[in-house]
Structures are given as structure tokens and as C-alpha cells.
Image (cartoon, rainbow, N blue to C red; front, side):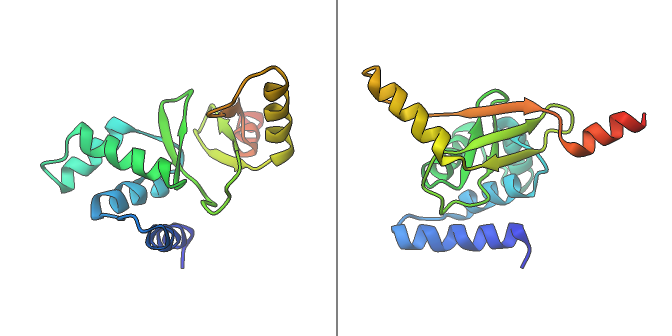
Length: 150
């Protein structure tokens, strides 16, 4: 089973356990995101989906994305306004994203101590964190190697 197939199977199991519907459109949007090398924007998803489903409109994609985010299957890359599949949706804690500014590759980290420190500091200042997005923009090894060869 490939990583994409494993993620889709896990998403299906997770939705079943939670009693939520993993509709064909939601599944297809997740497949598209999972199959991308980097993040996909909502309108890129819409263009791809419209080829298969002529009735697909922006609300169709945004509803599917909202569902996938709510279930922890997809993350929104705030700085790019794009979406990437979560490689470990069973991880219930915060995450950090490493984003290559050259090729768009996205890697997910789970540094729970970073999240705990930020939450503690916020609490000490009388602030309740509702959502946390940590994105680190830089260059991946492949792009650094390619630049060094050029």
C-alpha cells in the first residue's frame, strides 16, 4: 500500500470511528491533495475537480476542505493559502510546517514542547490560544543541492 493509499484508508477508518461521512467528493479532494508534491490552492482543486464533476463549484471544494481540516486530515498553509495532507492524522497535538520556497515541498513536524511552551506563555499573559500555525519557510536539501551544482 502506498503512502497515499495508506492515508486514504486511515482517513476512511477515522471517519467511520467518528461517525462522520467521508463522501466521494471529500475523498477525491483528499486524494488530489495527497497526490500533490506541495500544497494545492482551493481553485487548483476546483479546476481539477471540475474535470471530473461538471457541477463542482467553489462551495463544494471549500466545504470538503473545511471537513478535512476539521477531521485533522488536511492542514491549511496560511502563508500560501494552500492545503496539504496531514501525514499523521492520528496525532492530536499541534504541528509545525517546513515549506521549501523553491519547490513547494512541505514537511510536517510535531514538536510538542514548542507548542506547550507557547501555550503556557500565552496562558501566563491571560491569552487563550484558539489556533496555532507555525510555518518555517526556507530551502529543502534537494533545492540546496541543485543550487550548489548550478
